[in-house]
Image: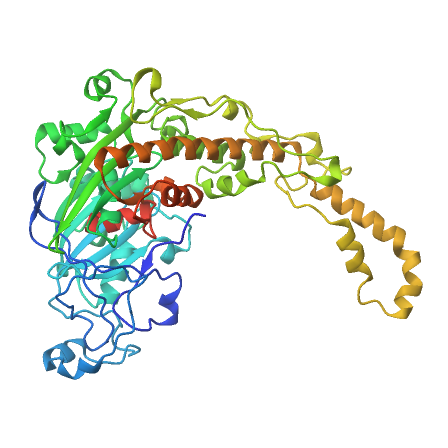
Length: 561
């Protein structure tokens, strides 16, 4: 339910087995030189994928109007002989398994644009050719460290990227970064502070590589992109249509004060939606005044963008709606006070924490929800009872009486994951499995015990019948759901139904407002495949696109775009 980690290799027919694990097909970028907001390159061309090893730096001039999900990746290489001697020489060898050259090796004069999600969960890198825009390498840090959703600096990712492309640090011309917890570039400007933190092994200095040039990349032109805008670009640039609407929904995005400070000071290296301020709807409408008087900050919750690709090359992405939610607790507390915010994604994540003790187990919550209505026959028809009071109600795009409201009464008090109900323990005091919902079929168990018996077995079966029946009863008792498990089903069903109700109304509203017929979805909420199915089936969109990296691993792709 969480989707796969981001690992993409584009420029060869058969990657080495060690690089093939978790590979994700995606379309290719081409970054042009037109301006976006401020003076930096951002326009896109989607180029045809290149298959031949000898020609893998070659791209067609005809824009690819589809993604590789329905494009032919096995086109004939009849024209391989036309490749120039210089192309062949620059690759050193046409053998993709050469011990002396990575199959992803680029010509030595290649310059790169690198997008990064760093110092946060799902640290990821995406690198594209600065001239053609072709994506050459993309990878999540977890693939190197084997730690799910790994965070921290990106020195190891940059090192692996350059190693695979057979390039050096001087090849990186431009870097675009994001971290939704805090600004990145002001932090990296203070090299002395970085050295001090490394010496004490505190903050990001606790991990090796923090002060390395592979992480700081100070010789490149560095830019910073706000969180939801990066999500929007990750979907819009990769989708197989030329115009549409992008809906971005996650637990929390960029802080309003960070965006406001850069806008007021005119900082050229930081780009956010506030450069379009006054042209899009904002909830609350007086967010500027509210942020000045609030104890803590406000953060992006849900955003809507429209985009258009022209001439198969340029792309325009503009916000039409943004909702901000207040930080109700100090951001220095556990998980930045995330579970106390009122975004749709944060409320859903609070249910995940309440049930599983993990804010990032939302896929399990989605999986539990359909158990509502199931009856366990072995306990007199046991079933979960619905939670009557909705957790999420109202309209995300309105304020006042009809506006969005939350009620977290069902997610207060002792969390389900911490409850120690008596029925969680057997007669010896051993704790049983907390969430075990499988019905145990007595008849199938008896038949299974009898099947395959020899005549001798049948003669002795009467003597063991009582023992078998006791085993069955013990198994049934151990697999009947506990009270806490039943309550977990009730909460999962409630939060899933509320999410679908609120978001369906939200997206339908902006479909009518924008007149767009194509939909892209990004952000952590876009990992909810049940919701995605309803959005694509029931709202009348001609086409719906969810990238294979809707979570924060996709931020690097959006920054690269």
